[in-house]
Structure formats: structure tokens, C-alpha cells
Image (cartoon, rainbow, N blue to C red):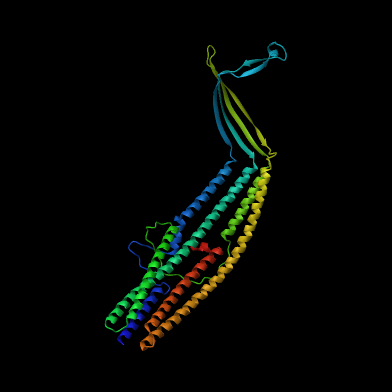
Length: 452
């Protein structure tokens, strides 16, 4: 009877302590000396600043803006300065008609003309007056900037989604960790007491062996959960953008609310596909415009210097030279290259149209599946709560039966394990609900609310 009373007291203590450890994470971890507790919102806010992929996306936006400025700069005038010096070892020859000097008509005589030193300098200006390809390039780079901004928004959503999922995984592992630690501590106490009772021949050796086996199983589970928890924390640190050596603690409390239905907003993937289609259309129009003529204004001003360095007539003199004009360029035939490029671009636009339809239809399907899955996980939460109530009833019945001597230690331990499994299933169901709810936010375009 002493053993039964002692045993019942210990199992009730185990049950109460385990229940306190796992009841929806209401016990908050205290701060460690070197660690800080990170909320999910803190992880998201830090990642928005430190995450390397987001930094690359922000740089791509800046890069696109610079490319747009480069395209606009093609409308500005281009000014070039050039200079050259030539020293003729052999002066160039010219054929002069002999009739100019009183000779025979139709006869020519070669003559070397000029001076050995020739210097020329000029400054040239070119200004495009009409160039449809430049305007097409400006429009394309403007669309490309919008595309980079959407890419950044998509990267943000992916980071938010991934961090939230990993954070939920870490929370459930933390619950499992402390749950196992509490059960292991109580199991060790129970083992020591049973060993003492065994030495007093008040219990069987098999009862001690069963508890020892359960202790070893808990130790193995704890080691595995600790390893998984560290791996998940490392992944979370990487996404947040902090060093692996930094200490990080996460909130143990799992915040669980049943939200209202989400409004179906515009999704980034669809916006990206639409913008890519607009970019393809702009590129197609630029290709078509390449068949149009271009008009440019150009002008030049320079000095030509001629020098002679032999006596008695040494000199170096400069003479001005300037001109201005218009240049018209009309493409006549490009070997069907432009025509081929236009056909390729039309095919790309058709593929873009099909991709848009595919994204819209796929998103509708995924939204419907996510809503159904969220409904199922909500029902699972309710079912696991009922299972906890049933498991508690069975557990207390086993305690009473064991006290009366109608049930064995094995049956009581099995009932206790069933209760702990029901509690853990409830936690897993809550996290599964949070994950599918997060997925539904992403599919309906509401995930950006995580930043607020």
C-alpha cells in the first residue's frame, strides 16, 4: 500500500508538471546572461535590414535606376575633342595637269605638295534630334525599374514566409525540448525511488526496468530535439542576418488566433508576369522602330596647322576649319535580322500571355486548397483538445485502477504517454494551422501585413 500511495503521488506530479510545460507555451523563458529573446516581429524587422538577398535586391533597384539614367543620357549632346600630329618623311604626291603650266593638254606631272609638319585639332558635337530606338530604350528601362521593385517585393515575401515557418518550427522544437526535459527529470526521480523500493523488496525488478527503458528513450529524444533545434536556430540566424556565434532565444508562447477570411489582393507573381509582358511589348516596339530613320545634328570646329623647319623659310601656321549639318540615316536592308528578332519577340509575348493565365489559375487552385487545409487543421486542433480530455480521463481511471490493484504499472505508463502525445499533437496542430494560414496570406497577397 505504501508503494501504491507513493507511486500514485509521483505520477500525478509527473502529469501536472508536464501539463504545465506544454500548455500552449504560456510560460515565457527568462533572459539568459548573454542571450536575447527574439520575437517573430523582431526577426522579420532585422531581416528586412540585414538579409543579404534583400540587400542584393535593393542594389538591383539602384542598378536599374542608373540604367534608366544611362538611357536618358543618350538624348544629351555628345562632345568629342580630337587632335593629331603627322610628320611626313615623304610628302604625298599629286598629279597636276601640265596644261595649267602651259604644257600639253591631257598630260599630267607628279608633284610633291605640302609641308612635313601637319597638326590638326577639332571639337565635335553630335545631338540626336529624332531617334526612336533611344525613346524605346528609355521606356524599357523604366519598366525594368518597376520589375526590379516587384522582384524586391517578391524577395521580401519569400523571406517573411521562410522566417515565419522556421520560427514556428523552432517554437514547437522548444516546446518538445522542455517537455522532454521535464519528463526526463521526473522519470529519473521515479527510477531512483523504484530502485530504493526494489532494494526493500517492495516492487518488482521489471517495474524498474520499464522506467529505465523510458528514461533512455527520453534521453535519445532529447538529444535529437536539441540537435534539430540548434540547426533550426542557425537557419533562422542566417535569414535574419546575424552571426552564428550570436546567442538567440525565441519566444516560447505560440500566439494562436483564428483570423477572419482574407481579401484576395493582387499577388506579386502575377504583377511580375504582367510587368514582364509589358517589357516584352516595349522591346518589340523598339525593334519595329529600328526600321525608322534617325536624324542628328552635328558640328565641328578645328584648327589645321602646317609647319616647315628648314631654312630660310621656317614657319608654323594654323588655319581654322568649321562646319555644321544634319545627318539622316535610313535603314534599307538588314539581312532579315530585324524581322527574325520581331518574330522571336512575338513568340515570347505569347508565352508571357500563357504564363499569366497559368499563374492566375494555379493561384486560384492553391488558395482553394489552402483554405480547405486551414479548415482541416482547425478541426484537428479541436479534435486534439478532445483527445487531451479523453486521455486525461483514461489516465485518472488508470490511477484509480492501479490504486485498487486492477491495473499494472505498464498500463498507467501507457496512459501517461498517451496524454503527453495528445498534448504534443495539439501543439503540432496549432503550428500546422499557423503555417497554412501563413501560406494563405501569401497566396492572397496579404503576407506584407507581417511587416507591420
